[in-house]
Image (cartoon, rainbow, N blue to C red):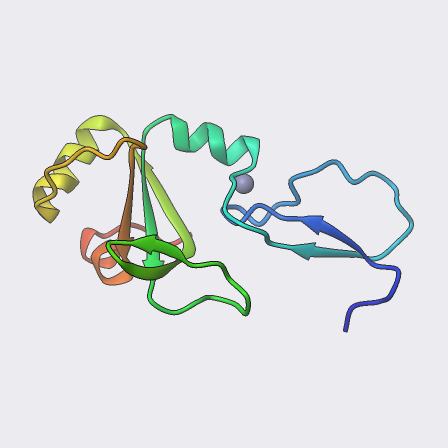
Length: 121
Ligand SMILES: [Zn+2]
C-alpha cells in the first residue's frame, strides 16, 4: 500500500538507484521505474563500450514496458553487460552476429547470456 502523501521518485531501471537528488522531503518515498532511460552513471558505463542487455519474453514486474525486438515484445531483466570492442568481436563470432547496431547495443536472451558465461549481478 502506498501512503497518500508518498512522493514517487524515479529509479534507474539499470541500477535501481534513485536517479534524482531527493533531499529532505519529510514524506515517504516510493521508488518507481518508468521507462529505460539510464541514469548518468549507467549512461556513462554503457557509452564506454557495447551493451549486451538481457531480455525475457515475460515482464519482470507489473506494468513493465515492453521493447520491440524483431517483431516481438521483450522485457529487459535488468541484467546487462558492457564489453569492449575486442570482447564484442569474440561474442559476435560465438553468436554469429554480423551487423553492428547503430546504438552499439544488443539484446540477448537469458539462455544466450548464460551460454556466454556472463556473470549475474
Ligand atoms: Zn543507473
